[in-house]
Image (cartoon, rainbow, N blue to C red; front, side, top):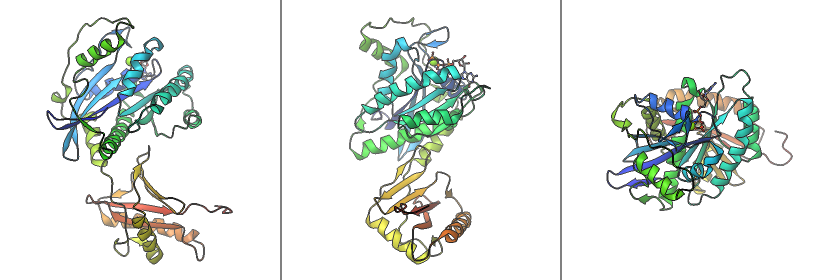
Length: 370
Ligand SMILES: Nc1nc2c(ncn2[C@@H]2O[C@H](COP(=O)(O)OP(=O)(O)OP(=O)(O)O)[C@@H](O)[C@H]2O)c(=O)[nH]1
Ligand SMILES: [Mg+2]
């Protein structure tokens, strides 16, 4: 659970890698660690299988005025260690579910996903973010992505999917960026609800986490050997890494953009007159923006309008933004029906020095044939 650590005024978040046995969780965390020039700390492994967790710790990026410290963990996948897995999941701010795309692994994915969904259901305060990292996409018999998407659909898990080949380090950074972004969304929500505690994190080091887990287990699970307990402060090893970059990207993006309003400059809204009236309506409804699993910003005025801006629809240069706006307006104008306004596009300042393209649409009315 995220906290503000008063000792150094950092926001501490935790990203947990979950998934079925042998899905590639440790390989994924290892790939993040490799960029840091440091091995991940894993208390006791037997034949390469995780018994407690993998741990990587990194401080970098900013959330508002505070530094972000990210604890990156992976759970043990083996079924006999399920209580350990559950406790780690409950402590997460965001989860990367590493799905095994091999046909045999895919069968386990389903069970592990439904177990995860049950854990997520019980979380109060603020929902834990979830992204699926579909791993082992290099296998010639990898199950189609549509099949993974379909089990997510049947479980009503509306989450983004990132494809990966963890053994080659492919897709790892992308999935991690999404997870950090979701974790920071959670921090923002906890803050809003005055639930973000000022406290030292539960576990400040892997040694502390191990002790905590053992204490809670009270010997109910056999303790693994404690050989090689050295905690490397990876944050001090290599400032440039995929972890540091990912944290920088996600933290820059964690700021909620300004909602476009009727003060938008002329030439930056289509249709010009009706569009401005729609913006007035959005402003009066005080639309709250949230971020989808894909990174899009979305807001709704129930029954009236949906406002959406794709993750990538942000421009440093107003002229580039305007060119995209003109294209979008042209497409909408071609499909526009007489006397109705059901779509509107606008390029508005995001409040952070850049320009964001917004699409505003009315829900289809019954009888519409699309
Ligand atoms: N083909 C292929 N193999 C992979 C990939 N990623 C990981 N593996 C292999 O899958 C096996 C299991 O990887 P781990 O990372 O140890 O799996 P885990 O999820 O941590 O497993 P547990 O800790 O036992 O739950 C290893 O042999 C990896 O080399 C991948 O992208 N493609
Ligand atoms: Mg492992």
